[in-house]
Length: 317
Ligand SMILES: NC(=O)c1ccc[n+]([C@@H]2O[C@H](COP(=O)([O-])OP(=O)(O)OC[C@H]3O[C@@H](n4cnc5c(N)ncnc54)[C@H](OP(=O)(O)O)[C@@H]3O)[C@@H](O)[C@H]2O)c1
Image (cartoon, rainbow, N blue to C red; front, side, top):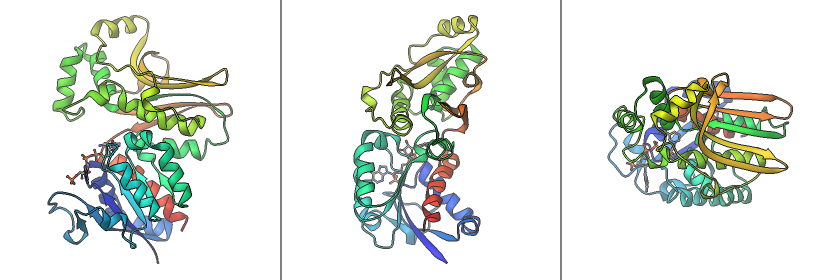
């Protein structure tokens, strides 16, 4: 039986979800791929009695420089040290799978170049749309298209807040507080509500759809923190919903992009994407319009995308 050994950097929400799937669905995945996926090391700085003690290490080198590790899963988050860890893993001949949109967007060129130089896979399906197979679809089933436009609801926190403001007529600050209490928003919600997280995801989408890298800081970005109940009511009077849209389109051969609250007509499929759900609406010159919809976050949906990337590496063994 072929084996693929995995090291996980950061067994938090997503890394823990990936570990759970790899453990619970081990036999199913082995049957489908003919490969046994084994987690052999997990990097954590804390005591984790819920995980097997013999797998745990607090030394990144035990994974990054371990000849027994074939695939490194990076689920630490943030740009550093995550990006350096990924580069180090690639330079040691390891495939890398990540959910980290901030690091992928910031260091996209360096990461893809280093993966190519080392002839290893660098996969990041989980970084956009959590469990929704967006990037795999762009690079697979849709890859015979010239892409014309993408509109994404790619941040669950802001979509949850805008949905509640629309449905309950509540104010932004009131809904944000409720979202924080329910775990849909971080204690510091800046990255989500100011559109930074969506800009990271749009950067990754544009790189794959239009082969164009635009740094997240170069994407004109407006968040939702200034949206009022009056804005929502005014949109409703025109038969529209306000959604935070990560938007890029080809106009006269140039890619035009933005992250901003937009009025989406109720008849548009994106208007029906509510609460914490995500959707990416892509227009290709051959396929027309396609919408991919699902859970954009959470341990198991995001873990599912990580495991899908690992399986695609296993299938190439
Ligand atoms: N949460 C989601 O639903 C979701 C969805 C899509 C994408 N993502 C992305 O997935 C990544 C992980 O997010 P998460 O929600 O799983 O985060 P999380 O729950 O905070 O887990 C982060 C893990 O990384 C470890 N870690 C943090 N800084 C570290 C450092 N400097 N050195 C070593 N380990 C470190 C943590 O430490 P210890 O174990 O040592 O405490 C923890 O195990 C992020 O890039 C995020 O944007 C998350």
